[in-house]
Image 1: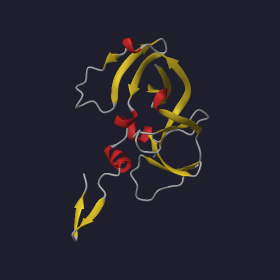
Image 2: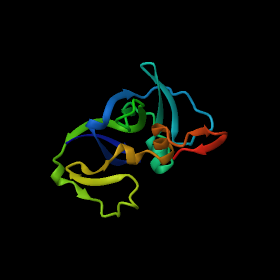
Image 3: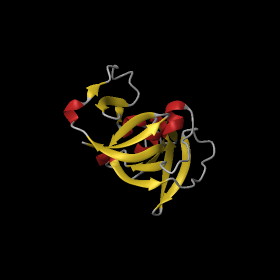
Image 4: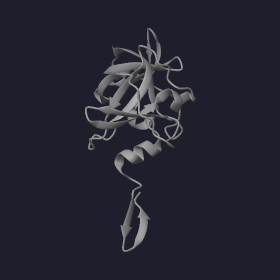
Amino acid sequence: MMMLLFKINGERYGLDVADVVELVPYVVLQSLPKSPAYIAGLMNFRGRIVPVVDLSILLCDKPVKHLMSSRIILIQPVKSEPRLVGLLAENVTETVKVSEDIFTDTGIQPETSAFVDKVVMHPAGVIQFVSPTKLLPKEVRVMLRGEGRTTVEAGNQNDVV
């Protein structure tokens, strides 16, 4: 498997490159009033509005540093939906090929692990492999699937879950 590596708060993480639609430089984002702190803003990507999640705020309550190596990783979390999401991260500078049989379970019960599926020992240190869909907060996943919309049926409003 080929992984795209990035850092958050000095820790190394990796995404399967098959989950990456495109890698773009950090751009000035349009703020989104009253959005959660981890929403860095909105970007225009080839005429499409893309929400961008600041992974550093999401994981350690500190914003991503604006470095030359900071990038927006575009993913399509729901393969059946065209909607893209940007993941803002630091030190997005390399890819590494690893054999899937060298991954190790984190030892954390699945229901308590937040987003790290497994880890791999690499000469440069431990790499935590993340699933983009697990990484996104529930509110973002709900928005992407169009769940939680209000519908009107026979004069009554019902939440679609």
